[in-house]
Image (cartoon, rainbow, N blue to C red; front, side, top):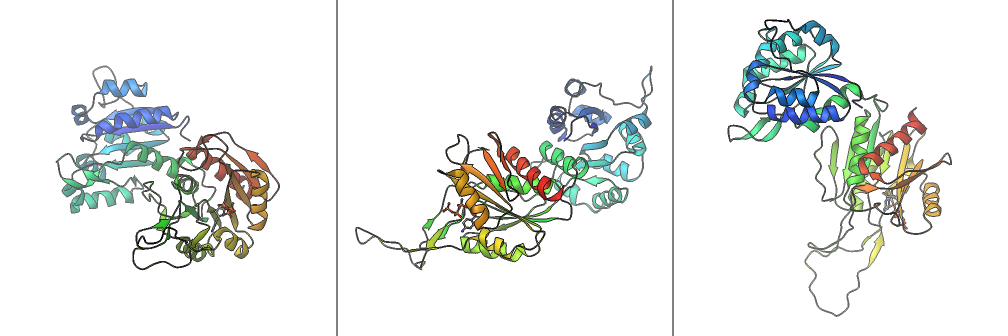
Length: 398
Ligand code: CTP
């Protein structure tokens, strides 16, 4: 997404400047052309040699030296975007008040491109009324502010004020400036992970689903502009919401209720959860004690969420299901497409290496209502999510 994009990275005097080295590296790796401008005080935190080597451009610091004058107007016009990361309290205050005592500030004031800042400071400075007022001013100038994180700070304290991680900064600029928002104004729901069916207060029936595929799909839909709600069972995979609404559920019944409530207003639903097919008929209130040699647990079918949504589907709603198969894969996938009234079924076969539960990769074939059968290679789950979302867009929102 950042291939060929021209990015001006401003670095100010903050301990978080060390992260800018990784930021430059990641930006260059993703195909962007990066020019770095440093404030004089940032030189105490990172070396311009490191940054010029990684960015393949000389680093700019001074407005002029004895031989030349840096054309700040040209720089501000060259860039597709100006990112200031880290943004110190001092530079923030100067930007808010239009001060211009170094090259970075001169470029900022003459930039015609969008400006994004990633503040970094100690918690008390971050919460100071003056800082808040300065950030408000920046917002009023049309600048975008990447939220700070919570964590260990340079002071040794723990709290708000950490600069966003380089990966988060790249994600922010990609989503906000460089993606075509094909799914803007579309509401999507995605299910992910396993469900747990309680037997008693300490035991349950579950499965090994990690939730990774559903999380990757939710993120990709969000990247394309959709308003996404992820309904996730008790998966072990960490997930920080990052703009995605998160609904945590435990059982198949909880997931069913959450989906049904949200589907009515949704444009698109992707059911990638590994929902339990059966649940105990009764749940014991107390822990079941070991007594007989044999123990029979009576199970009853859970509600099929995908099928229920298929029955309720209205004109214009798009419904995508998954099929995890071990034999007669195509036949079963087509059967599910028809029986559950889905628009697409994403098949993953447990016979394929690197596909299914627990892996970071997956290998899928998509079957569409239109009769298409699209086979993909083994890829990371993030790449598979892109393929799935690309196919949804091509068939329904192109
Ligand atoms: N699914 C669902 N609700 C259920 C069971 C499954 O919504 N109670 C959805 C899954 O999220 C998936 C699709 O149905 O999108 C197919 O799931 P899968 O487990 O492959 O198939 P089942 O319909 O459960 O049939 P079987 O287990 O017999 O293959």
